[in-house]
Image (cartoon, rainbow, N blue to C red):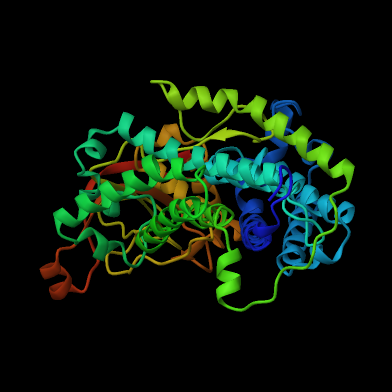
Length: 477
């Protein structure tokens, strides 16, 4: 490789771009399915009201020009279609000047959604997708060798993602330092998966090994990303292996998959290609002078913007999952600076009784992903993101008044709002709405091996308190 081009990384670029396009596609499909109910004109936190409060400089978005649910569907549908096109690799058939605008448009469309997404889009993997998507614009296509500078910027992003997550753990909860956090985490994580019960029931020494392995992957391996090959590939392999462990043990939307895709861009696939006897890559054309200039300008921009996240990394008051500019260009990341020791779930119930009495029979609403019925195996849905289910986990950690979307959600249930009901797995009143809705707070625990064999249940739960008193249209009980 020379000072600008890295032709041996042609397959690394292809894996990264195809993987990123697949994640973009999932993100736009999630938006098409869930955005109208959560953020649409009649959603729980409507975008039009948000746009009236927040000016364009604070939240750049094409929706400042116009918003309607139909226009949003057009934007998200265009993003999904464009993602599918890029996933097939058709951009490699275009000239460089034609391929780059496709990636740029994809970034603008998704950024526009994130910047009006409010609490429903306040997740680190949203900024991660925006940042990775911005860098993808400048990776070139099949006609050019991957720019070395952009490949290094991807490594810098992966370093901040992993090292920042490791530091926030070591500076946060003591259980990360004494290797005991995974005594609790598999049970109390936001969205357990079908294997989470089995991970939780591993022997405690195995949990300590898990934590130690996590520290190696997040505090040691990231420095290897900047080493010569094959050491950088080994470091990336450690990160990839850790991410697949997380994929098996829980549901974290596309965070783990996007991390895998980023790490794949570090791996030098040239030796593997030769070992498998695959044809060599097409000989790239010389990079246009204008492309070299653009890449240099973007590199300077990222270096300048890196001051704030780099300072955050060395700060004793490190924050996680923060954007320092409204375009989500160079961000800081991290997760689970503290680990909850007990799992609390908000269970929504309704009744058709005309009045609430001690004899009232309440029936539960079942969510698609979050724990509900004790006998239901936690499902696997990542990399798909169930945004309402995730917010319900956060609701269980604090009082109802801390979540302004909760009462609008209850009102939607009291009217059997069709868009809202589509977010749920099971609705106890499909034909006519309930007269009252309430919420109870339960403590959930995974059953033991003996309890699992005896009852067939994955969870046991204990009522803690009434979380939201019975409410009906117009007034509370």
